[in-house]
Image (cartoon, rainbow, N blue to C red; front, top):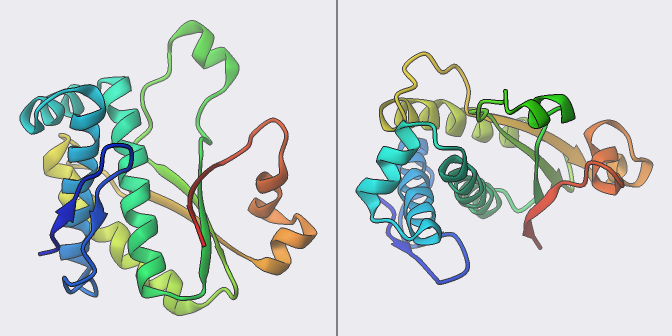
Length: 183
């Protein structure tokens, strides 16, 4: 199991001495790191943060999603040297939903991974990590029927230059993704 170190302003980082090739271990470490980050930011202990997450508290889940996205980005970039940047974006909200308070926190974590090249190995890594995260998250947040936790769009440098597909969001004025990892 990976060991974690938590700094004051950043999500916990996965210790590179642990074997991270195992998706289950990496997912568990990422979930623990995300809960620790959430607890720290909300001034809660681990148990209180977990309870708030199970109760679908919007603020708690916002911190959790960011912390988990950072853990995932570190893991993916650590195993695939082609990964250059990772961005998080919100694809769920419409202004009407926000105004009327009808929006439930989405379980999906939307990421854009910028890689030098798109490879099947990277897609397989993301798929394995998603499956492992779903299994770990199901018990953590009362989500037994969850099919996916990750929505990852892999783009290459050509997509970024041409602003095609999801890479167009990276230069968007109105829907700017949040940088999670930059190399």
